[in-house]
Amino acid sequence: MAKQVIEYAGIQVGIIVPDGAGVRFVAVKYEVYDLDEQRFASAPDVLRAIHALMAPGMKLPGRAA
Image (cartoon, rainbow, N blue to C red; front, side, top):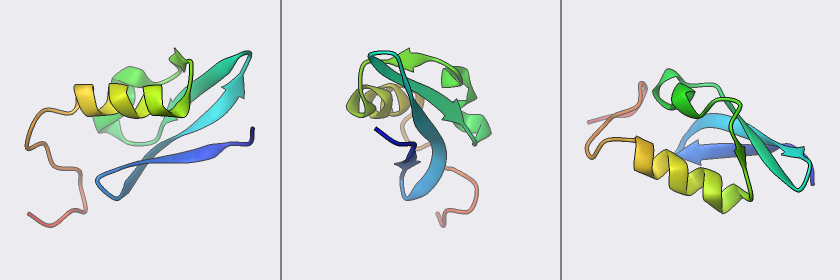
């Protein structure tokens, strides 16, 4: 597996890199920094964690209201 860009609401929020049997998340947006350097079993697990972290209605910079 190669590095993979992770997006939330159409905005790139980080990348995942292979790490042992799973992946490691590297955040590039402050809003998901709490997940930076965490290890996950798969890319879908990273996306679930991001969705759980983001409060309902939370906006990322650069997104229209």
